[in-house]
Structure formats: structure tokens, C-alpha cells
Image 1 (cartoon, rainbow, N blue to C red):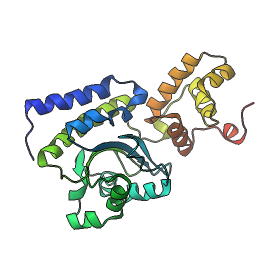
Image 2: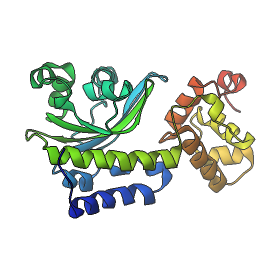
Image 3: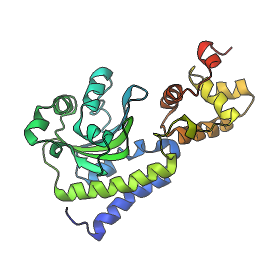
Image 4: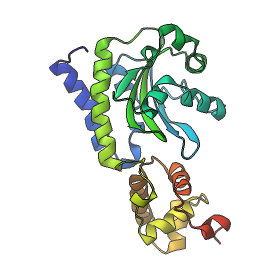
Length: 258
């Protein structure tokens, strides 16, 4: 493995610092931007999630967004792409490295003949991927990919990605704990449970505040706490995970609030 110099670590720390100092709701999506692309001299960056417990595979953010709307038009094809991706399988099966070169997990010929490679090339024009793990388990894989259209990544690029994976994985754990834990590990206050159960109906923060007799700012604080406890980036994925864990009340599921 290639060795990193002081300048490399300074660049890595700049990205990590942004992950530490951003708002909780912005992580990790905020990292899919031009700065990370510049770090790896990449053409594109995206963050994706594969939650098999909720039956959901989705893209959290991408740069450039217009080029990488991978799942906008065909969510089923995107799910097939992600669940069959060699890096997703590697992390799902407990692969120990915090980052991998997707094209080197199999032979070069096998990678180029794979449906994942074909999907990636067709929808984004990318062929080379370094995939950085934030969470990896049999039921949940969340990570980032830096991509190039043609030029292969070097051993130094992979060494940088692995250091970044270690750092950002730690930031993710500090922010959200272990998002793969079961329902016994999640404890909600009564008010958080009320907000969670109203979220599934698509009510705005102001509507929830009016219904519960609290301020919108208080609703926002409960929302922040809920995302942190579930390890999710937004209200939709929080509701989906709560449904999977059985943390929504049967009463709230079966009737709309008046």
C-alpha cells in the first residue's frame, strides 16, 4: 500500500473537518461535492444507501447532481445495480477494508462484464470507482463513491480513500451511533414518538407544531434527535426504519390525523 505524506493528511483532514462541523442533517450528503472530487481528481462523487431491512436502495446526494441522478427514472434498476455491486457485497459481508477499488474486487474482465458496470457506464459515463464505507453490515450499507470516466485510480488514491473511510466512519459513528442496532437500542421520548408518528402523513414542521401545541423550532429539535437516534439522513428514511423496527403505533398507521 502506498504511503501518505503530510500534505495528503492535510487534505484528508480538511474533508473530515467539514464532516465534523456541518449540521447533523447534512452529513454525509454534504461531502458529495467538488472538494472531494478535487481531492481524488475524480469526475463525480455520490453517496448511496442500501437498507435491506427496509427494502430500500437510494442515492443520498451526488456531484454533479444532473449527471448522476442514477435512480431518478428507474428505482428498480438502481436497486439491482446497488445490491449486485461488488463493493456493496464486500461491505455487506463484513469486508474489513474501509475503502475498495470496485474494479479490483473481481478480475478486470468480470467487472467490465457485470451489470453494475454496464448500469454505471450507461447512466453516468463512469467506469472507475473507489467506494468508501461509512456503515457496512448484512442489512445496511452506506457509503460514498468517487468516480472517473476512464483513468484508473492509483495505489495512492486507494490509500487516501482508506484513510478517509476510517476517519469518516468514525465521524458517522459519533454522530449517529450504530444505525444497524435493533429496536431495543432506540429509546424515544413521548414527544419524539408523537412527532415520528405524524411524520408518516407528510405533515410539515409547522403543521406538527400546531397539532402538538409546541413551536416549530421545538419540532425541528425533535426531528434532529430522531435522525440521530435512527442514524438516518431525512424524515422519509426515518419513518421507513421506524416501521421496520415496529416503533410506529398501530393506531397512527391506520388513521389519518384530523
